Image (tube, rainbow, N blue to C red; front, side):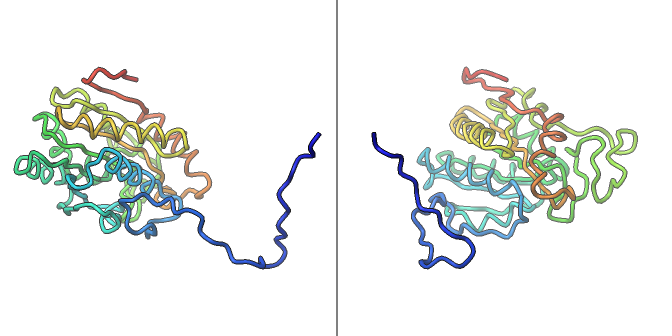
Length: 268
Protein backbone atom coordinates (compact mmCIF):
# COMPACT_ATOMS: atom_id res chain seq x y z
CA UNK A 1 0.00 0.00 0.00
CA UNK A 2 1.41 3.38 -1.03
CA UNK A 3 2.16 5.84 1.72
CA UNK A 4 0.32 9.21 1.40
CA UNK A 5 2.48 11.99 0.00
CA UNK A 6 2.54 15.34 1.74
CA UNK A 7 3.92 18.64 0.53
CA UNK A 8 6.97 19.81 2.47
CA UNK A 9 6.33 22.32 5.22
CA UNK A 10 7.57 25.78 4.26
CA UNK A 11 9.17 27.53 7.24
CA UNK A 12 7.85 31.01 7.97
CA UNK A 13 10.44 32.18 10.49
CA UNK A 14 12.69 33.64 7.76
CA UNK A 15 12.28 34.91 4.17
CA UNK A 16 11.87 32.22 1.48
CA UNK A 17 14.93 31.17 -0.47
CA UNK A 18 13.12 31.65 -3.78
CA UNK A 19 10.88 34.59 -4.63
CA UNK A 20 7.24 33.87 -5.38
CA UNK A 21 6.16 33.93 -9.00
CA UNK A 22 2.78 34.60 -10.57
CA UNK A 23 1.21 31.35 -11.79
CA UNK A 24 -1.98 32.83 -13.23
CA UNK A 25 -3.53 36.29 -13.38
CA UNK A 26 -7.24 36.05 -12.56
CA UNK A 27 -7.97 39.68 -13.47
CA UNK A 28 -10.97 39.72 -15.87
CA UNK A 29 -10.04 40.64 -19.42
CA UNK A 30 -12.07 43.85 -19.38
CA UNK A 31 -10.44 45.21 -16.22
CA UNK A 32 -7.30 46.84 -17.56
CA UNK A 33 -5.94 47.89 -14.16
CA UNK A 34 -6.52 45.46 -11.32
CA UNK A 35 -5.46 47.84 -8.55
CA UNK A 36 -7.97 50.38 -7.23
CA UNK A 37 -8.09 53.06 -4.56
CA UNK A 38 -11.34 52.10 -2.88
CA UNK A 39 -11.30 51.37 0.86
CA UNK A 40 -10.29 47.95 2.21
CA UNK A 41 -13.36 45.73 2.55
CA UNK A 42 -15.42 47.67 0.00
CA UNK A 43 -17.81 45.42 -1.90
CA UNK A 44 -18.08 47.55 -5.04
CA UNK A 45 -15.03 46.07 -6.86
CA UNK A 46 -16.63 42.61 -6.70
CA UNK A 47 -19.89 43.94 -8.11
CA UNK A 48 -18.13 45.75 -10.96
CA UNK A 49 -16.05 42.66 -11.67
CA UNK A 50 -19.27 40.65 -12.08
CA UNK A 51 -20.50 43.19 -14.63
CA UNK A 52 -17.20 43.18 -16.54
CA UNK A 53 -17.10 39.38 -16.66
CA UNK A 54 -20.71 39.20 -17.86
CA UNK A 55 -20.08 41.70 -20.66
CA UNK A 56 -17.12 39.62 -21.86
CA UNK A 57 -18.96 36.29 -21.59
CA UNK A 58 -21.88 37.60 -23.64
CA UNK A 59 -19.56 38.91 -26.35
CA UNK A 60 -20.67 42.52 -25.84
CA UNK A 61 -17.22 44.06 -25.47
CA UNK A 62 -17.28 45.93 -28.79
CA UNK A 63 -20.95 46.90 -28.58
CA UNK A 64 -21.22 48.07 -24.97
CA UNK A 65 -21.17 51.56 -23.49
CA UNK A 66 -21.13 51.99 -19.71
CA UNK A 67 -22.47 55.17 -18.12
CA UNK A 68 -21.08 55.88 -14.65
CA UNK A 69 -22.79 58.00 -12.05
CA UNK A 70 -21.09 60.01 -9.31
CA UNK A 71 -19.81 58.04 -6.34
CA UNK A 72 -17.07 55.73 -5.13
CA UNK A 73 -17.58 53.41 -8.10
CA UNK A 74 -16.73 56.27 -10.47
CA UNK A 75 -13.08 55.54 -9.71
CA UNK A 76 -13.48 52.29 -11.65
CA UNK A 77 -14.47 54.03 -14.88
CA UNK A 78 -10.80 54.34 -15.81
CA UNK A 79 -10.10 50.67 -15.05
CA UNK A 80 -12.47 49.13 -17.60
CA UNK A 81 -11.48 48.27 -21.14
CA UNK A 82 -14.88 49.27 -22.54
CA UNK A 83 -16.36 52.56 -23.68
CA UNK A 84 -17.34 54.73 -20.70
CA UNK A 85 -19.39 57.92 -20.47
CA UNK A 86 -19.50 60.03 -17.30
CA UNK A 87 -22.93 61.38 -16.34
CA UNK A 88 -23.98 64.16 -14.03
CA UNK A 89 -25.13 63.17 -10.53
CA UNK A 90 -28.17 60.86 -10.87
CA UNK A 91 -28.58 61.31 -14.63
CA UNK A 92 -26.99 58.09 -15.89
CA UNK A 93 -30.30 56.43 -17.01
CA UNK A 94 -31.12 59.46 -19.17
CA UNK A 95 -27.67 59.42 -20.75
CA UNK A 96 -27.98 55.68 -21.40
CA UNK A 97 -31.42 56.30 -22.93
CA UNK A 98 -29.95 58.82 -25.34
CA UNK A 99 -27.23 56.35 -26.31
CA UNK A 100 -29.60 53.51 -27.13
CA UNK A 101 -32.01 55.77 -29.02
CA UNK A 102 -29.18 57.01 -31.21
CA UNK A 103 -27.47 53.61 -31.38
CA UNK A 104 -30.06 50.81 -31.04
CA UNK A 105 -27.31 48.28 -31.75
CA UNK A 106 -25.45 49.23 -28.56
CA UNK A 107 -25.83 47.63 -25.13
CA UNK A 108 -26.00 50.53 -22.68
CA UNK A 109 -25.60 49.99 -18.96
CA UNK A 110 -25.29 52.27 -15.96
CA UNK A 111 -23.22 51.83 -12.79
CA UNK A 112 -24.50 53.92 -9.89
CA UNK A 113 -24.52 54.00 -6.13
CA UNK A 114 -27.66 54.25 -4.03
CA UNK A 115 -27.05 57.92 -3.32
CA UNK A 116 -26.64 58.64 -7.02
CA UNK A 117 -29.61 56.58 -8.22
CA UNK A 118 -32.16 56.99 -5.42
CA UNK A 119 -31.35 60.34 -3.79
CA UNK A 120 -30.12 62.33 -6.76
CA UNK A 121 -31.83 60.63 -9.68
CA UNK A 122 -34.86 58.66 -8.56
CA UNK A 123 -37.03 60.22 -11.25
CA UNK A 124 -34.49 59.28 -13.93
CA UNK A 125 -34.52 55.55 -13.21
CA UNK A 126 -38.27 55.35 -12.56
CA UNK A 127 -39.22 57.09 -15.79
CA UNK A 128 -36.69 55.05 -17.78
CA UNK A 129 -38.24 51.88 -16.35
CA UNK A 130 -41.79 53.09 -16.99
CA UNK A 131 -40.92 53.83 -20.62
CA UNK A 132 -39.34 50.41 -21.00
CA UNK A 133 -36.05 51.84 -22.20
CA UNK A 134 -33.71 49.12 -23.43
CA UNK A 135 -30.97 49.77 -20.90
CA UNK A 136 -29.62 47.87 -17.89
CA UNK A 137 -29.02 49.72 -14.62
CA UNK A 138 -26.79 48.40 -11.85
CA UNK A 139 -27.17 50.02 -8.44
CA UNK A 140 -24.46 49.35 -5.85
CA UNK A 141 -26.32 49.78 -2.57
CA UNK A 142 -24.31 50.24 0.62
CA UNK A 143 -26.81 52.53 2.34
CA UNK A 144 -24.51 55.56 2.62
CA UNK A 145 -22.99 58.36 0.57
CA UNK A 146 -19.59 56.68 0.75
CA UNK A 147 -17.63 59.12 -1.37
CA UNK A 148 -18.52 62.12 0.80
CA UNK A 149 -17.95 60.44 4.15
CA UNK A 150 -20.86 58.15 5.01
CA UNK A 151 -23.99 60.28 5.17
CA UNK A 152 -27.49 58.76 5.18
CA UNK A 153 -29.12 57.93 1.84
CA UNK A 154 -32.69 57.09 0.90
CA UNK A 155 -31.87 53.36 1.25
CA UNK A 156 -30.33 53.58 4.75
CA UNK A 157 -32.20 51.19 7.03
CA UNK A 158 -33.98 52.26 10.20
CA UNK A 159 -31.70 52.41 13.21
CA UNK A 160 -28.52 52.66 11.17
CA UNK A 161 -26.05 55.27 12.38
CA UNK A 162 -24.50 57.52 9.75
CA UNK A 163 -22.55 60.76 9.74
CA UNK A 164 -25.74 62.81 9.75
CA UNK A 165 -27.90 60.38 11.75
CA UNK A 166 -25.63 59.61 14.73
CA UNK A 167 -28.56 58.31 16.79
CA UNK A 168 -29.71 56.04 13.97
CA UNK A 169 -32.22 56.59 11.19
CA UNK A 170 -35.61 57.42 12.67
CA UNK A 171 -38.72 57.11 10.53
CA UNK A 172 -40.33 60.06 12.31
CA UNK A 173 -37.55 62.42 11.27
CA UNK A 174 -35.96 60.79 8.22
CA UNK A 175 -38.72 58.70 6.68
CA UNK A 176 -38.52 55.03 5.73
CA UNK A 177 -35.91 53.49 3.41
CA UNK A 178 -36.81 53.20 -0.26
CA UNK A 179 -36.61 49.67 -1.65
CA UNK A 180 -35.77 50.63 -5.20
CA UNK A 181 -35.82 47.18 -6.81
CA UNK A 182 -39.24 46.46 -5.30
CA UNK A 183 -40.51 49.79 -6.63
CA UNK A 184 -39.13 49.30 -10.15
CA UNK A 185 -40.57 45.78 -10.32
CA UNK A 186 -44.09 47.24 -10.21
CA UNK A 187 -43.56 49.22 -13.43
CA UNK A 188 -44.79 47.65 -16.65
CA UNK A 189 -41.74 48.68 -18.69
CA UNK A 190 -39.37 46.70 -16.46
CA UNK A 191 -38.72 43.20 -17.79
CA UNK A 192 -36.09 41.98 -15.31
CA UNK A 193 -35.47 43.17 -11.75
CA UNK A 194 -33.31 41.47 -9.13
CA UNK A 195 -31.38 42.19 -5.96
CA UNK A 196 -28.14 40.40 -5.13
CA UNK A 197 -25.18 40.87 -2.80
CA UNK A 198 -21.43 40.29 -2.60
CA UNK A 199 -21.03 39.39 1.08
CA UNK A 200 -20.41 35.67 0.46
CA UNK A 201 -19.01 33.55 -2.37
CA UNK A 202 -22.45 32.03 -2.95
CA UNK A 203 -24.10 35.45 -3.22
CA UNK A 204 -21.38 36.66 -5.59
CA UNK A 205 -22.18 33.78 -7.95
CA UNK A 206 -25.93 34.41 -7.66
CA UNK A 207 -25.38 38.07 -8.41
CA UNK A 208 -23.27 37.19 -11.44
CA UNK A 209 -26.18 35.13 -12.82
CA UNK A 210 -28.52 38.07 -12.22
CA UNK A 211 -26.17 40.37 -14.13
CA UNK A 212 -26.04 37.95 -17.07
CA UNK A 213 -29.83 37.64 -17.20
CA UNK A 214 -30.32 41.40 -16.95
CA UNK A 215 -28.00 42.10 -19.89
CA UNK A 216 -29.77 39.42 -21.94
CA UNK A 217 -33.21 40.81 -20.99
CA UNK A 218 -32.27 44.29 -22.16
CA UNK A 219 -33.40 43.42 -25.68
CA UNK A 220 -36.98 43.27 -24.35
CA UNK A 221 -36.98 46.37 -22.17
CA UNK A 222 -35.64 47.89 -18.96
CA UNK A 223 -33.55 45.77 -16.57
CA UNK A 224 -32.24 46.54 -13.08
CA UNK A 225 -29.95 44.67 -10.74
CA UNK A 226 -29.47 46.12 -7.27
CA UNK A 227 -26.34 44.80 -5.54
CA UNK A 228 -25.89 45.09 -1.78
CA UNK A 229 -22.26 46.00 -1.10
CA UNK A 230 -20.18 46.51 2.02
CA UNK A 231 -18.86 49.90 3.19
CA UNK A 232 -16.96 49.35 6.45
CA UNK A 233 -15.55 52.90 6.35
CA UNK A 234 -18.93 54.58 6.00
CA UNK A 235 -20.51 52.21 8.50
CA UNK A 236 -17.67 52.64 11.02
CA UNK A 237 -17.49 48.84 11.22
CA UNK A 238 -14.37 46.69 11.31
CA UNK A 239 -13.56 45.29 7.87
CA UNK A 240 -13.75 41.71 9.09
CA UNK A 241 -17.29 42.29 10.39
CA UNK A 242 -18.69 44.25 7.44
CA UNK A 243 -20.11 41.25 5.56
CA UNK A 244 -21.99 40.06 8.65
CA UNK A 245 -23.16 43.61 9.35
CA UNK A 246 -24.59 43.84 5.84
CA UNK A 247 -26.41 40.52 6.18
CA UNK A 248 -27.81 41.40 9.60
CA UNK A 249 -28.98 44.90 8.69
CA UNK A 250 -29.32 45.80 5.01
CA UNK A 251 -30.26 42.38 3.67
CA UNK A 252 -33.07 42.07 6.21
CA UNK A 253 -34.80 45.09 4.69
CA UNK A 254 -33.53 44.96 1.11
CA UNK A 255 -34.20 41.25 0.65
CA UNK A 256 -32.39 39.38 -2.11
CA UNK A 257 -33.84 37.50 -5.04
CA UNK A 258 -35.35 37.89 -8.51
CA UNK A 259 -38.32 40.22 -8.15
CA UNK A 260 -39.45 40.22 -11.78
CA UNK A 261 -38.62 38.25 -14.91
CA UNK A 262 -41.04 38.55 -17.82
CA UNK A 263 -38.94 36.11 -19.81
CA UNK A 264 -40.36 33.17 -17.89
CA UNK A 265 -37.79 32.91 -15.11
CA UNK A 266 -38.75 32.05 -11.56
CA UNK A 267 -39.30 34.85 -9.10
CA UNK A 268 -38.04 34.68 -5.57
